[in-house]
Length: 398
Ligand code: CTP
Image: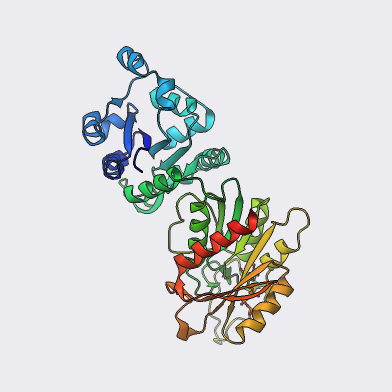
């Protein structure tokens, strides 16, 4: 990132101290950094420490005569290649979403003509509050990139999403924002990932062994090429990749609804392992054992086929629809048949026999089935498969 410059806006949260490590990483990669602190941020991290690590003047005051004569706030807002708000408090996100400019930091963000990346950090309840979620959605619609927050234990002793993304994760997001624009800039891609959970009763469900690793890696690879990515994910144990718009769902019906409301999209990749059936008579109350010990009879009904439904759409159909086929035998025949039956453009087929270690593992060996034939790809890491697929999608959309 030699020669690039970042304007880092630090707002007031416990995680503000992590800004020091972020500045250190940026300086190590020859990126110049200028920091702007809100009044509250100055209580968590001192301007002096940020000045020392950034080797640059730190700005805090909108009405500082000396700062204004040296560099006006409008000039400051345009002086860098990228604006980064880390940590971004709920209050600051709300100000950004509503165009409020009542201090130097918020004025600079409103006045800028440069891309903006925000790294939210706050209490889990504040993050999950409908107001914050609506503000973040509004910012994303305006093209502002969001990294994190991560899930985990927080300073307030609660657990859940709200932790600031780690400095190295924010650094990686900055790096990809500052490198040349990818071939998918301006394109919207929908990706499904993970398993679905189909309830039997309020505490039990039917699921499968999908980890979501391949789908999440594809979402990340597409975002790295510049796409706006909507990731609709079933329950998984991993954070979303940087810069994707995550929609969490549990059931196939919820996944279909989330996909439909994410359209229009230029391309869609259906990597989720959707349960083919759900329990028709799911109980509202927990099923109890009966005196005779007889197990409950579960009636299964088919779930909607999300891939087939989106493939059959009219004008709203994404230009490129990619499905997956998990097979244990006669892979090529089944995959070609699936391409026809589902009405999609490509099928990424893989052999998920337990001996391959692919389901839940780190590697994948796939075969790309298109109208032109079948390409056999070598065994690669799931990240490499994702990068290769993302490049193919970019070629197809040009
Ligand atoms: N799929 C979907 N909605 C479903 C079922 C599957 O969108 N209700 C998608 C998956 O995301 C994947 C492809 O369809 O892209 C897999 O199709 P599927 O028929 O489920 O294949 P397999 O899981 O391999 O199952 P089977 O061999 O039983 O057909």
